[in-house]
Length: 341
Image (cartoon, rainbow, N blue to C red):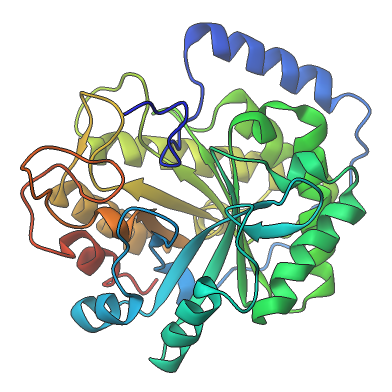
């Protein structure tokens, strides 16, 4: 599978050359940004959407959400992805309408069965709203269309690839997210990004710092601890290391206490075989993440993706629709469903 074109590509650039470029971009882009007082350091209670695995309804033979709910007890899903339709206008995959289509019907079904949804904008592939909208006001307006269409309680910005690598766009995303956060009382917001085994990349650190300077009261800074390029130990151990690094960066940027910092971070893992040949996220790794999340009261425990939460019929691997490991259906989702803060 060519990950350069596949919609499953969810990878941060962490190689040595990339790291140098990232540091340069972060230093250059941060110049001239005005600092604002960090938001009040109020401890965050874990919201009900903290356990909300991703499901991608556009490909990968997605399971009916009602069947997933019945089989696992999961109540919330993170539905992906909202992209640009070519301009500063949101659409599912950049193509399907917000309302009146199959995605809206799936959301109605989830809610009719007692669940709800987080909607994710961004991802690796496709046209990103952060790039197509030319100002923070315009980008906030695009996010607001999604919020209004579904009366959202939670919004995830999955910032990757070119949307992440451009310092101007990083600032635009932060400023737009603050605007919608301020305009929608009680809206839970997540910012999801790639990571190294030690914590966020230089771009990720810069993004968090920009959020703090802008006064963005973000509920969860979330990392995707996979597709590392290289790591040591189990994937569970690498995830814990990445999350400890993330907590330290959030603590330093915002001035939170250690406990508050952990309550403002989250994890979005990947089940089974990832896009790297040496990476296999096992059920034991998920249990390690669950224990860590419970100990530190993380803001979010998600993973990519419900579509993959089953063995491959061929016994091989298919990154779109199965995990590539021998497993019972929904085994990973059942672990995530146990998380309640």
